[in-house]
Image (cartoon, rainbow, N blue to C red; front, side, top):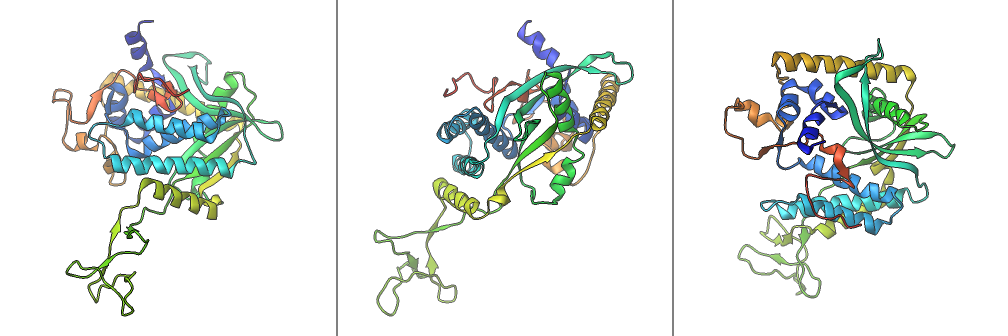
Length: 372
């Protein structure tokens, strides 16, 4: 098939991300999937998630941590732009690498028996009532993994890098009980020929600690404190003062924490409270839940088709959603297709880059060879 024809055909894939975008806001879905307008730079959360998945996929393949970190570095080398804030990107990459190191340490005694990793699927979208396939949409997605549990059962493996509290009984786990994404992946895993009995959520929480200023020290390791005139301060005993004082006008000299120092701080925090950062929880899926998911997907594609035919793509406006949407500026400025292409956006051929991920990097992001 001609690549351009294939790209157009991919516009008719129904992924979990696509249906979620449509349910959240029809206008957002129109921007992202109907006219294929995307931000040039991924948001930080998406970028970190992709980079982390990149490293995890290497670990799942049986490679060591050093190789996994090498892939994370390679990933970031592909997403860097000329005008990127290199310092913030360095800190972000250090965060991902530290979490990956912590993950390898946390689960070293509980390795996963991986049967398949980053398993893409493309399946007919069936009418639940008649069993006939849709003439427009196909189901598509990528399963993080298929694993064999210690008791021999097969499970869909789903990785998540989140900001939520992942403690026992938290709202995060309550929400996952009704999340249709894993219902779809259990269905797909079975259709791909795997014996799948349940879902294993493998979740990592992002740090809540922050980089802190580091005291500037002299060649002998003493901290530097200056008075209001910029002179270094000594104590009554003639030693260099080590603390600041607002009342006396003494200021402890500091510098930003380096990426390596920040990574060390995260690793130390992981060592003190590993269960804060990492959790594996099994969430079963009943056949009735899978059937409910498939019915919902069928209904959603019908609604999408109605929006396509009518050309009506309504906005879902809300103070808790709009400011965080990548298309917020376009909506607020009432941008139309007759207007100039907005800065920071581009029309793309591939509206499902997550399906083309190889070790976390999409094929349209780079032509460079991966380090393997």
